[in-house]
Length: 165
Image (cartoon, rainbow, N blue to C red; front, side, top):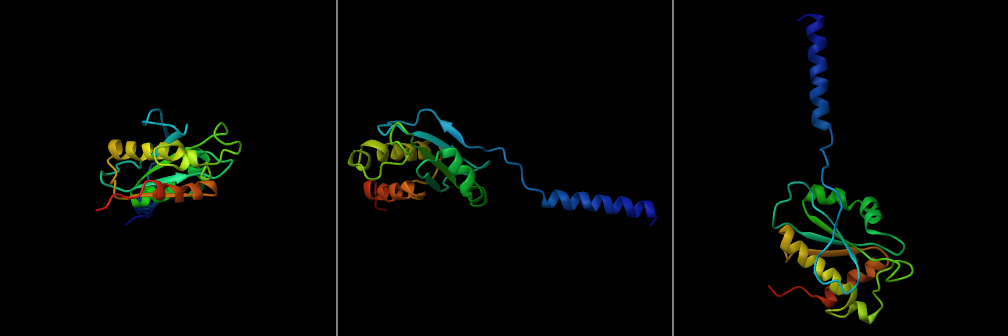
């Protein structure tokens, strides 16, 4: 094999190695859902679905902390990576300063934590929307959050417990 052939082969193997180790293209992004059903808590809905997500996959609801928003929490929490790796959809509700001066979820207000009312009912409507429109598994819905979002994540299963199987 000539020196030129060896160099060409070495260059080709480098390209193949680069192609095998390059990160996959990420076309999916966080999108705002304009109308998701009843919204007595005056929340905004954002969602993320990895490309090629099969139906019947889990849904994770991410609740941001005080002074945060859906986009910032989504971008900085690492959940996108796990959704892509493990194949699940994300719903990221967002509250605002019109609900709470610090943009906190109102986990301490009866009007926002009672079944059928306020922010809890809005989050439940988002889950229903995702199950109906994204094909997520209604028996595999998980809620997590940070700070006031973490407190609100405890409200959700207390207010809307899973249906018996």
